[in-house]
Image 1 (cartoon, rainbow, N blue to C red):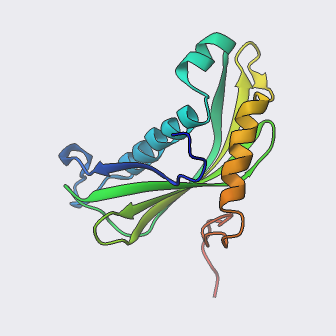
Image 2: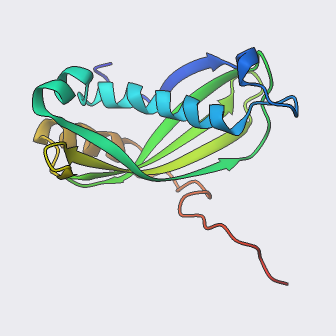
Length: 160
């Protein structure tokens, strides 16, 4: 993927083993689909397996917030899209969206804070300039769009 304006990371079909006792996709598999999509993004920005082996650097997900908005069921096709909300030399603020491919509805979102790590510590460390440049370009491509309402959401019981 040489193009820096891509937003779709992958298309999947909900597998039978991902279905829970309620007849829809289990929460763990939403996280799995988002995590596998993150790997595709990391490969695109050249934080590949080869990079990790060669540099002994990697990324850790520091925080994630998943919102389950509409259920998806066995054999449903889904599309995972992403957006870089913010980034600096060490961190990526990432937002992933899961859409039902045929019906178009937003099924779930995952907001993540990711940190580049030097495994010798382990400790936070700057990403290579070429990686940061790719992230900045991806962020810039969607910077004019309004933020999704789930970005920065908090969890709690609202008192009346």
